[in-house]
Length: 189
Image (cartoon, rainbow, N blue to C red; front, side, top):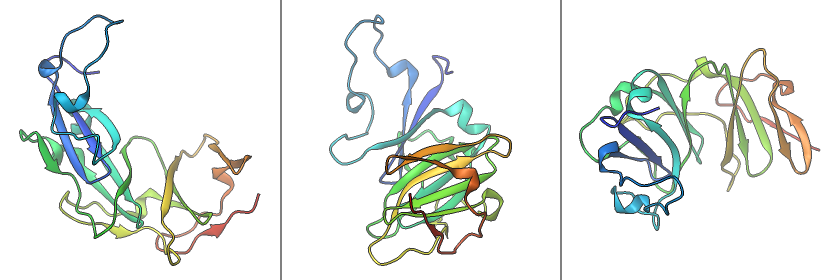
């Protein structure tokens, strides 16, 4: 939820965070055609994709976890993103890297990284250190040549989390609990 005095934060795959004042959004009826987000912010649909959207108020109350395609991870305090600028660098990226996932931490206990080659690594979120927004982060898992992180999932202790992988159902809680910066296991379905 967001009040009309609040701001909306857009995190993109290029590591940028764009903020939009709610008052700057055009007023319209429910059935009206909307306005492109490019018109009310510095966001450009041609060069970047939105990875995560949240309100500034909710962001200030939690920690945020970043995951990149080259398997760099970090946890950042949400209060660091309470800025007045319309666009800021939310994370530092290595050459050729992009943000795959940005998520607010609530009651998640484990993180599961999935690579394009089919490797999965599940480990505790507590293994990811808290960094500042200007840091690159730490390596989440060792990647093979040409491999990169494709998806990031989160599991809770008491709740069974399932995904569809290659047409079959995969229970993420059944994956072996490993350590950060290891290879992961190849899942055959």
